[in-house]
Structures are given as C-alpha cells and as structure tokens.
Image (cartoon, rainbow, N blue to C red; front, side, top):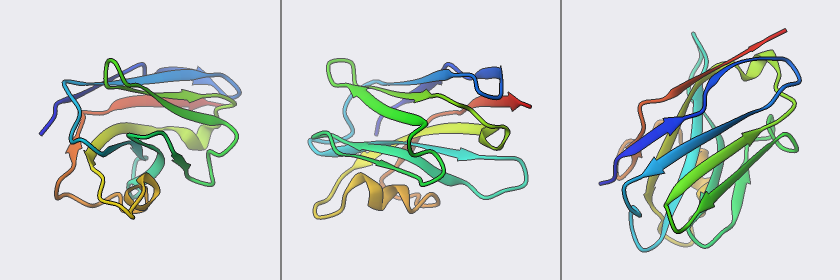
Amino acid sequence: RVQLVESGGGSVQAGGSLRLSCAADGPPSSRYYMAWFRQASGKEREGVAAVDSDGPTSYADSVKGRFTVSKDNAKTTLYLQMNSLKPEDTAMYYCAAGPLFPPRSGGWYLDRPDMIEERDWGQGTQVIVSS
C-alpha cells in the first residue's frame, strides 16, 4: 500500500486555473495507475483523469481539452493541471493509485470510482470555482 498526499486545491473564478499535486511514498506496483477522482456535494464520486505507469492517459469527457494529467516518475508524483475551470468543477478532488493488470488500462479503473480493493486514496483537496 502507498500513502498519497494531495495539495494545490483552492478557490478560483470561472475561467481560471489550478494545479493539483499528489505525492506518493512509492510506486504501488511494478505496473500501476494513478488517477484523480472528484466528488461534489450531494453527488456521486466520478473519475476525472488517469495515467498508466507506462504513460497512457485517460480523461472524463467533461474535462477533455481543459485538464491535463501527468506524473513525475522520479518522484512518483501525480499532477492535474486544470484550465478553463467551470463552477461545475467544484468538488473535493481525490488522488488514487493501485496496481494495473493488463489488458486493463487506467481508463478502466477511472470508470470504477467506487472500487475499493487494491486501491489507495489520498485525503482529498477542495476545489471551488466561483462564477
């Protein structure tokens, strides 16, 4: 298991940008995914973006073209660059990581926000976008 610590959340006006970071204390496995999920008040948790250990990325349709997920392999740190933010992006953002079992991709795990087994979670960081 790995420990994940998010940072970078805050308040911003619509159209603005934020960059979230998630520091892991090590790789979850030799092959792994790292992902961002979010949960708005009164709504179910949803996948935002994921990156596989060998590079491929996946995005929710609602953030494509606005958000960019990346990772620093040397530091096992996950990033989420969020541009053109909208009020509907307001949510608690959580970092998650787990082993990746081919042929599954990070996108497969992104589509399963409620999966508990073999997945570690961070404590979350709040993002508020005002209109």
